[in-house]
Image 1 (spheres, helix red, strand yellow):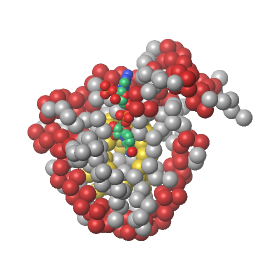
Image 2 (cartoon, helix red, strand yellow; image 1 turned 45 degrees about the horizontal axis):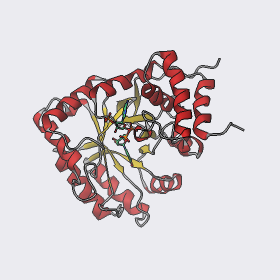
Image 3 (cartoon, protein in one colour; image 1 turned 180 degrees about the vertical axis):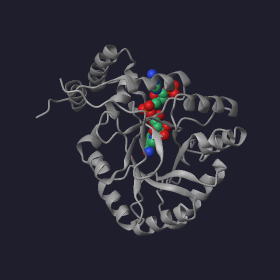
Image 4 (tube, protein in one colour; image 1 turned 120 degrees about the vertical axis):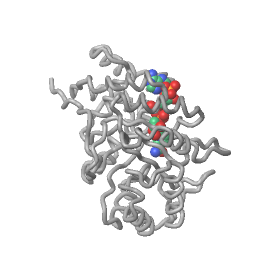
Length: 302
Ligand code: NAP
């Protein structure tokens, strides 16, 4: 039986010199708790060995208000406990302006980056990602704004999220530094990036894929249709064999791809985040890995 390589606990962030944990933690669902609870949660995440933290200026937005709330809360935690900031590689995103226009014009990005830094109470952030592509922004203008922020030391590295492959090529063409990460939705319920070339492009360009909603937003924990049930049946078989949870198995399935995607854990419960670390214990055979893929495709491989 052909066994896939074991997952390592750390990896490089794209072409940067930053070493990050192989699993990240996301703050989409972080706002709305008090500072003491938020501090405990962040300590719990770091204690698991997770060093990559993913937030965004829009996290906390309820459709009416709350824009910036997740960054604000993190900023309050970091201000109160000065030991935390140096233990994390911090990633944020911008370029979505509520309620919905996307804006990657130089003027907007410049303001958005400054606002993020001010909310976080930080002079710099290690990774800053364009959250969603703005079709109306010329990539040359976007590239200039991002490079300017790098040159001023406001952002360490540039990443993208929800970009098509051609949008990545276009932005990259006008940048004089590498795009170090790309953040698509990836899970055993969302396999498109494994089949449509996105992860191949990530390997070619040495971008670290950051997998958003790695449990399909919770649907792997609570499957709600036939396809999801078929997928969790395959995951559960492996979970049982390695004596780990279905969720840890689902993260490890993503991580076994040769582009080494980093699942961004979305749970805000310390015990579930700790449980996720069991993902490192799973070793996939080609046969078992493909069995999950086939269940996700809903049809046999050709
Ligand atoms: P997810 O891991 O797919 O889903 C997490 C959700 O599943 C939480 O509500 C969690 O609830 C629930 N859940 C239920 N049972 C669980 C279990 N046993 N273990 C773990 N979770 C369980 O991730 P997500 O929250 O949708 O997204 C993760 C991160 O991806 C976000 O925080 C954000 O950083 C990023 N993201 C990025 C984009 C983008 O456009 N770039 C879009 C969406 C998300 P509990 O909290 O109660 O455990």
